[in-house]
Image 1 (cartoon, rainbow, N blue to C red):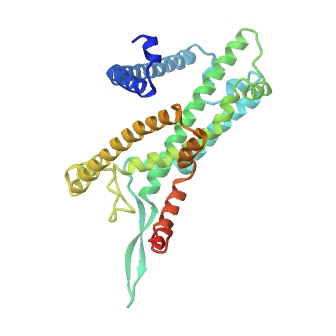
Image 2 (image 1 turned 90 degrees about the vertical axis):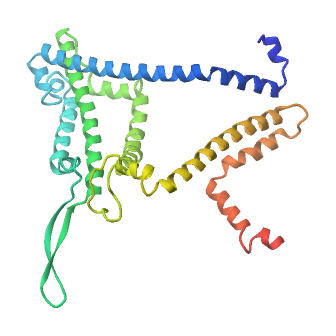
Image 3 (image 1 turned 90 degrees about the horizontal axis):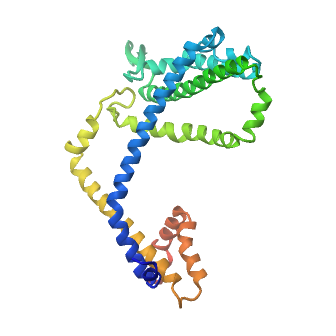
Length: 328
């Protein structure tokens, strides 16, 4: 279609034309999306391979101090002028080892079985005598939660460890070239200037990992266990057994009707919201409509007011003693 023909269309005709073009280009867009995902996975794997290669080559070609830095984090920095940075790397290593020895290691050791740890204790009963009851030292949900935390801490430590080895190799290269490594204050200024985005994003990323990602992974993994009323204290991994029970077991009669209505609602709500929303926007922007700012404000209020407040207002409005029943 020529541009002159397009600009002569009214808003509704333009919407119809764009919608038709969107449907026509949808298969190519889906194909491009999956191709992009494949390229991203390929680049990710190649990046890991290159990183492992650089890691091995750096160790093989490094001097004694550089090789020892692979075992003692921060040694290469501390011996070549970056004392504070080397101490910080070493402190991270000590903190991680202490964390795993004193706390995380025990949970990580039970993570793959989720077997609760308990001892039997004697409890007195009426009429004399004793019975043995388990006294739990580790609950399965604690093992799962803190095991995930230990894995996340290990991933973070590996990232810092790789950064420390790179920094040690860089210091060795600078010393070999007769140059002086950057001081600690210079790097702090760099993180407050050129790398300020990393400084700003570090705290939100840590908070998201602790308060969003950790509970999300915990709840997802709970679906692969036999957790229920009978196994609330001690449970174990069951793989996809729970999903099989939902699809073909006792819950199938409830799951599929709910799934069907959910899909119908999702498709219908999305389609109608998109179609009528665009239609309403085109209507407001058309000529002859007065008080456009007022109409826009009214429609935006729906999104500005929290849903809880809207539900509370409707509950009061439809109450037995509410305005509607009083009016009726």
